[in-house]
Amino acid sequence: MMDRRTFLGTATLLAGEVTVLRAQEKPVSKPKSGKHLAGKGLCIAPDFQAAVVGAEMLQRGGNAFDALIAAAFMEAVISPANCGIGGYAATGIAFDAKAAKVVAIDANAVAPAAATPEIFPVISTPGSFDYKLPDGKHKTGVLSVAVPGVLAGLLHWVDRFGSLDRRTIMGPAIRQARDGIRLDKVQSRTWLQLRAEGLGEMLTNLAEIPDVIPMDELADSLEAIAEEGVSVFYSGHIGRTIVDHLRKRGGILTNQDFEAYLPLDVNPVSVNVRQHQVFAPPPSSGGLTSLQMAALYDRLAAEAPLPKPGTAESIEFSIEIAKAVWAERLTTLGDPRAMTVEPQSLLEESHLNQLLARIREGLRKPSPGKLIAPDPLRGTVHLIAADAAGNVVSWTQTHGGGFGSRVMVPGTGIVLGHGMCRFEPRPGWVNSVGPGKRPLHNMCPVLGLREGKPVIAAGAAGGRTIVNNSAALLINRLINGLNAVDSVTTPRVQCESLEPALLEETIGDGVVNSLRDRGHLVKTVPRDAGTAHLLVRDQGEWHGAAESRVPKATVAVPGD
Image (cartoon, rainbow, N blue to C red; front, side, top):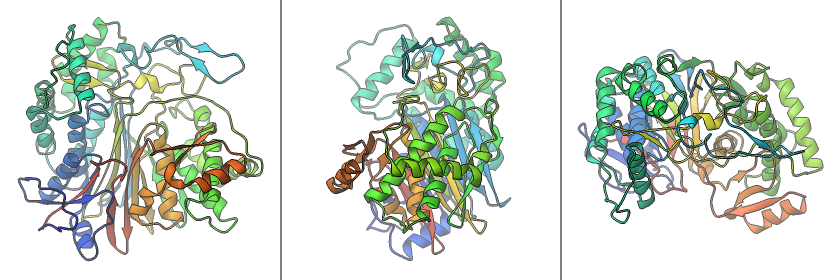
């Protein structure tokens, strides 16, 4: 049974129908949303097809992990510019209802054993934190490839938490790859070019791009993985094919690098925000910084009347907080084995108070800040799923920038991510390249509990905007008390260690002028470059909101 007020289309499922909720619509009125969302669960994804596949798994009797992983495999097929089974990294945070505890996974890329801090020569700018690279080898091509973690992370969670078998979970993605996918002309052309380049050929007839791109080779790879498991990718014929292709073209990854890869079960970092305990995966993820931002906003707002969202005062708080935490993030965080401090210590009250002192000084005397390490890359997907048993999962996976390394391995249909470009290319930094290291990345799925039960899950995509937007969702919901949809649609601000801050035009000229009068450098943009999704529990019912700034983002729930 569908609610016609929110119905967008039909989806033929083996186990029944799903209800689809538009990202920009408010949740359906009670009791319909409560019946669906609290009773059977939901899946939020950046693409309609992925959200529907997640809902199908719930309809079949699967749990939130099954739903999310099925949706993630579908995204790995239909969104090849953003992610894939060769994607460099993924990370997740979840509430395991059976154990009544928060769990986290690090499926980050790992640098080859042969990688050295000098692998990407840097042209420094004297007296500045800025720099240039003589070429793009850190970003595209075989040297940009680290051991990819996305597939290992997905299958690890299937084995540990899933209730359905691999073939059932991966089946929709396999069928979609076999049928082919529809991409826009630019992405279709890129996919075909990468395939031709992998074969040592040139793509001709560029004007004749098919409407549907066949992906039989990718379907074959997925079939093999569904049958044989993760070993076929990391120590079997797929892994050997990947390594052989890279080595023939000057890469340094070895079969031993692939065989040694393991995703890590990690202890999440956490902080208290307004009677909620909020969790995120530890570094190398961006979660610690997002938690710092939310906790600092909470403490700053507690010193004076809480500013209304979207006002100059609230945005100024966000700008000064961003400058303080990003300066610390880019100089202090990285692979925990290379850090000189315990990650959780950066969320302790004493350290937050040190950051607050810098922020207060910035509010008294605004300054532009300083450039530390630029990064313009975009290319990620985020998903959320929940079920009736109480499991909640927030997951992010990525290639890095568009199509990652832009290396497609012949015969596999697999595009490889560019994990090496996530390292700091300058030697001597915490996040500098090193053998076996995991790079600092921006993904930061977050999860919040109140009285031991999950009440919020969030995450985002879009390069460094992920860190700020995940924090903004926490602030909007936990501190400002906004509902799920308003939390997602509120105008956003982006700032790192250096102004100008980027503000969405919907903030309004009055706020922009007020911030400039206060001494801030700000620019306006038509829309934020990132996307974000949010799940909140309100009066005993789950409410999901997918990103309103993109047309395909979807919340899907099992039907009656």
